[in-house]
Image 1 (cartoon, rainbow, N blue to C red):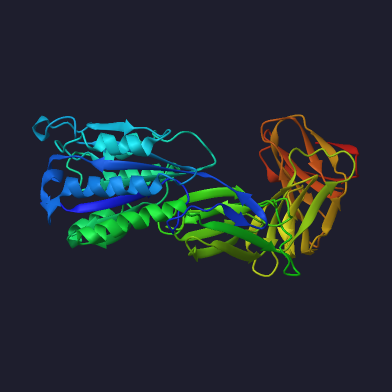
Image 2: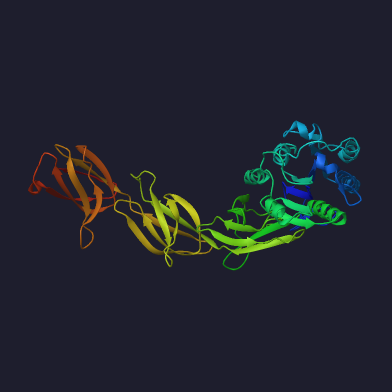
Length: 460
């Protein structure tokens, strides 16, 4: 025998308390529309008796009561999708699902009337119904879209509700589901853990309480404010990308660019409290806060120390380099931080960095200090060029003579008789042997000096 369970799939943020209130924080007010889609099981097993009434009678009576409760709520819209009611179970129809009442004016009254005419009949295509329900919501960025599935058991078609739920969550169609089941054995409970957060109810009264609780959570908002603190513990940092990952599934739920509102305070975000989150602030380097648990129905403030300063990398004069870059590492830990393109300014967390400029030869600047609210500048000399000319292709390399030992900085092309190399100012030695020469004694050494903006020719 199949058991009764209720799944609330949250397409947007949700929380608790049976009265809807505007979001108020930071002296700003944001009012959004809450849209609740009820997906109701009308398969044949819903006509089976459950305590004093059939499962269908209990479900429709509770839904009718919910419609009455929502009737006078402002900016709340409802809709109804039903499955398993158009063909008999013997027909084996696993696509039997229909949006009976779409979102619109007085849809609650239309749902109550429609419920009186539907009778339990067919199969239980949960996965297919969930996939079809994803298109029932109007496109509206200022809405909280919620799906509540009421069913008396597990999928009996070939679909996989867990896989559908995961894929749609991954695509940001809806957020982490709530699962409320009545009288489920442990095996069935485990089957729904992958669909969402599970709640258990064993009697009609508990079923009623669970349904009211889920709808209540849909009507109030959970809000979040992320304060990025500077060196003086003031929330002055902004314009940074940040990602909220589902801590359990590892998928990104929300991506925002941090900003201030009109009061110069961190902007208010709407998040679903059903999930725990790993928050990544995409500073350089990144800041990570793991396993954040939100307080439902409240304004949550998350603070992170993220003091930043700027770094500007410049080349004097006209550069002969293409896409010159530098790599940065933390001076204390050696941790790789990122790549910085020249003639740009980027922000980094304050601290000490070792910078390796990918010039020829490589230039290194150790323990460069990034300070709060300031821009540190590094300017390297304008490079010069050397033209290498030979009578025939050969093997060779260019070495810097700046240190106590020769340092190879460039391998000469094996297939060309002419080559132009961009080099930093300094003294170099080129060693070359033609492919036509079969003995090492025929190697040629040439010393030369490169000046900023200058061109020197070396012939072999």
